[in-house]
Image 1 (cartoon, rainbow, N blue to C red):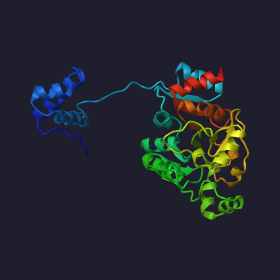
Image 2: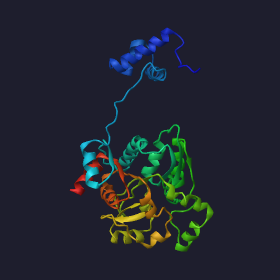
Image 3: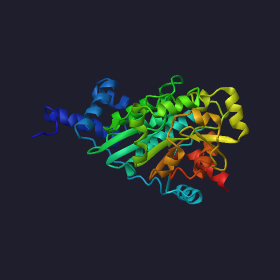
Image 4: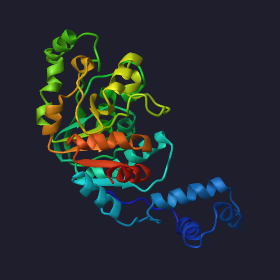
Length: 325
C-alpha cells in the first residue's frame, strides 16, 4: 500500500510547519525567516517547497466563475454564442494577450472535452501556446486530429502536426499526422495530395470530429507582432488582393470579411485544410484568440456562424463589445 511521504523526525516536521506558518500566515518574507532560523534564503525556498510536497501546506483556490460574469453573458447574448470566456488580464501586448487567452482556454476546455473521440486542432501561435499548457485528462481516450497542413518556415507554431503532437502529449492522448504543406503551388497538386492514402487517413476523420479548437488569424497587413502568422507567410501581392476583398481574418486558412462572409480567392484552391462545410458540422467549435488588434477578426469569425464558444482576454472582449454596439 502506498503511503504519503513523511519527514524523518518530528523535529524536521515541526521546522517545516513553522517555516510555512511564518511565511503563509504571519506574512514574513523569506529573508526575514532565513535570519530568524539562521539559514540561507535558498534553504527557506526549499523548505517551503518540501512543506507543500509533503502536504503540510495545501493551497485551495476558490471555484472559478469564468463564463458567468456580466461581460461574458452580454457578449454571448449579443453574438449568439453558447459561451464566452474572458481572461481577466488587461494586457496591450498582442503576444502576451494571445498567451493569456491560450492559458484561459486550458482552464475551461475540460468543460467541453469529451472523454473519448476525435478532437480537431488548428495551428498558429495561440494554439501552440494552448497545446503546451494543457493538463492530463485521466481516464480519457482521445485522438487529436490536425485541421490543416503545415508551413515549413515560420516556426513550429505553424506546423500543425507539431501543435497536435504537443497537445496529445500533454493530455495523454494520441495524435494523427497530416503530412502535407498548408499551401501548394498548383490546384491540381492539392487534388493529388487529397487523394493520397496517407492524407485521406486524416481527412476522412474530419467528419467524425466531436470538438474543434481553432485560432483566429489576423487581417492581412494588420498590426505587426513578434510571431509569424498564416497571413505573414503569404506573398505581398496576395495580401494586397485579400485586403481589397475586405478580408479581416481566417479560420483554418479560410478567409472571411467583416460581415462573416467567406471570401473566395485562388489561394483557396491551393490550400489544404478542413473544408468550411465540414467545420460547420462539428458539434462544437471553440475559437481562441487574444489582442485588441484581433477584435475585428474575432467579430468577423463569430459572424461566420462557425465558432460556438469564444475564449479571449479582457481588453479584446471590451473592444469586441464596442464593435457590436
